[in-house]
Image (cartoon, rainbow, N blue to C red; front, top):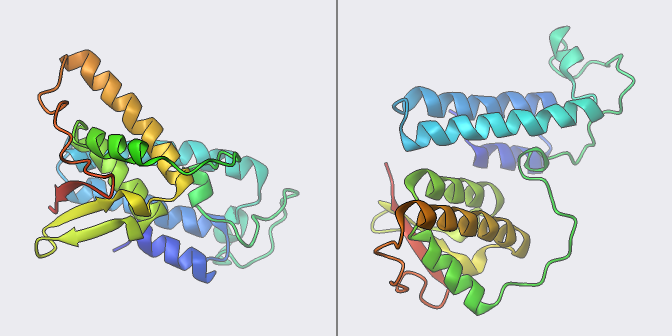
Length: 208
């Protein structure tokens, strides 16, 4: 089995010879998720969405770099010399860059109020939307995910989310909460800020 956490650790160890091999493992994650979850379920839809998003980003990487596909096709296992005129993917290439592009902007740390509001908004997300938040945290800042209740649920420690990751997630969550409110009117949980607390911890999700 393969998961994004394993891929990230392999990237950090320099275990991949080229970007093509990384892409193959990432595709396996989406394939496994869609194979072992019911079609149309939250996780199936999330995997389908991520697969499409990944291919869009990876296509741009292929246009700019020689990702090693030529060597792999020739049976070299990714270690052979490519005839492409494009530069090889850099040795510090990470698929994180292909999935979530950096903004290149220095961001100020979020205020306590912003973190608390973010935590409260998590309770207004749908299953698929919450799945996106969890998947992003698992990929970008696994230290922010904490298990509780005998590992039956996952808790997000908002204070451990890095500034840039928080900015991206907050933009996503805010847009989704706005869309959900427009479609469903006032949410029954919109007046309940207990989940946000001081911003330190947020929504729990039961493990499947």
